[in-house]
Length: 126
Image (cartoon, rainbow, N blue to C red; front, side, top):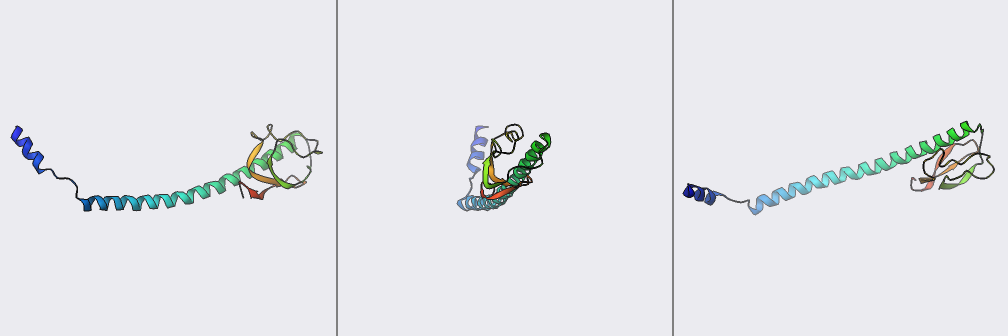
C-alpha cells in the first residue's frame, strides 16, 4: 500500500512555465475586455442618472406649482444646485425638503418664468 502511494506521488508533475504564461496571458486579455466594457457602462450610467435627476427636479417644480396654484416663478438665470428655497418674490414654499428629498443636487439647473427646468452647462451633470 505504501509502495503504491510512493509510485503515484513520483508520477505527479506540475505545470510548466509555458503553460503558466499562456494562462496568465489569457486572463490578462479577458480582464482587458471586461475593463473596457465597464468603462462604457459607467459613462452611460452617469448620463442616465443626470437625465433622471433633471426629470425629478422638473417634477418637483411642477408639483410645487400645482399644489400652491402658482402659474409662474421668478426665472433663475444663474445655474444652481441648491433648492433649499426658490428665489425671493415667488410667494411659494421651499422646493426642498417638501418636494425634493435633498436640498442640493449633483447637477446645476436653471429655470424659466414658466418653470421649465434645464440642466446648466456646468456642474456635475453637464
